[in-house]
Image (cartoon, rainbow, N blue to C red; front, side, top):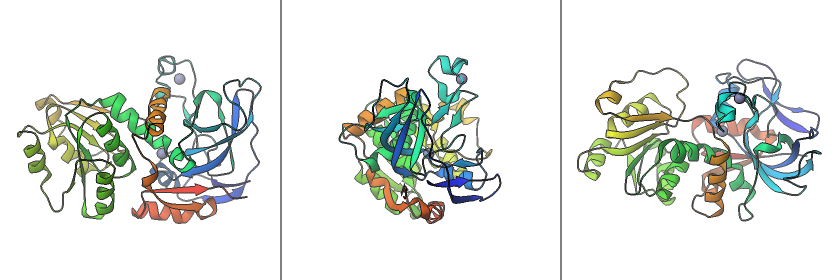
Length: 343
Ligand SMILES: [Zn+2]
Ligand SMILES: [Zn+2]
């Protein structure tokens, strides 16, 4: 079967290759991939800025149909429409595994970079990380349940928003667009912040329910947030841009005793006025990946129609055109690209 493979360490070294079809082990299921999303992490893997384990099939955001189940699998059957978490391998013994926080297991191997992933026709995963797709969720929407679970983990589980709170989402990329919808469901008044180049993404945020969009090249976000909060500042800041300037702005916009969550990955150490955390008595947190509970919440939200993922999809390509998808993603010309298997 054809697969997008990172075949060697170093920049690039990604190509479409023929790889053997995998077989489900005793506690695994074999999923026929129906749709898979390109993630920012895939671009980092391309440039070797994110550690992978070559040769490895890329792709970790996907859904599909079960075609084979191992002998110990009773929870799923052939024909089930499913999606999967990305914690392909964990130790099961450490403090994090034992407390359900296996996303933080030091032995964790991620699907699509630690072990073979989903930019291909068939993908094998352990049964414990498989989730049924709600019947009314199509494959394109379902392929984005992974980033949605990340956003649920960061927004609901790590941050927690109370109804009526003013929530600033810095950066309208995929995680920002999903987090702003979740913050709305939690009852927040959501202000999404971006730049002129984010024009379309900002209006999509509004279309998906955000209360306000702010282009910081045209408006002053500090004044706007002060006006909304009797001068206090934002109750909650979700920093989804993963940029130093976004993080600095977010820290500035948060009110005293407010919450600040670093949702975007910066990729390198940055310079920031860390002391603000002390002066403002901020609650600062972050998140990494997701766990079982975030997936269940994410799939409920999708099934209930409270959050939408499909409007984020701006391009659909066969896996053989992965390079085009990667390049457009890198230039910021797309929000989400879906890849389909060939053959
Ligand atoms: Zn991802
Ligand atoms: Zn562990």
